[in-house]
Length: 171
Image (cartoon, rainbow, N blue to C red; front, side, top):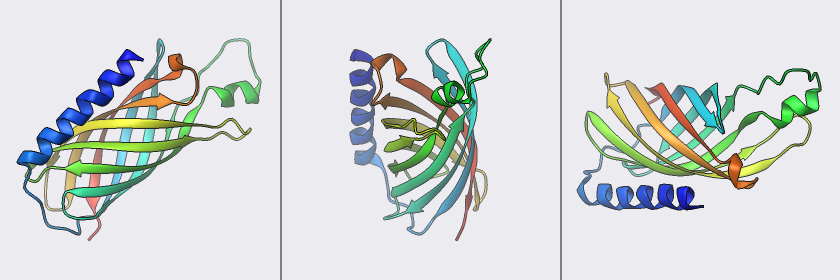
């Protein structure tokens, strides 16, 4: 509980501080993002991927839509598809991001993710996020971020995901 509160408090303070010093950028920079992920769930580290769309609302305010998956757990001695599905972390994201302006950009955000499975195993998570990005060119941006997933499941099922990827300007 304290870890979740700390993560949310740090994110909130950073957002407030960033909003005071950020200059707006030009509106209309919608981007397609591809990211490699690394999730830390309990004592396990899982690779994953994310495909997202960042829709620029007002220059520094963005709507983020994405789909992601972390690799399932490999459990010795089981072949049950239902059990393997229960250990998957995949789903759809809907969130808000605030970005600073410039070649180097800071970002903070908050998203809601619905985790789904093929056998009806579902839950939701609230995900505070912080990261940095650097514009490599007019159309290409390199990004790194971290999200903490506060799940509707047991508290020991909350987890961190670090992402590293590229985003491509669409317009």
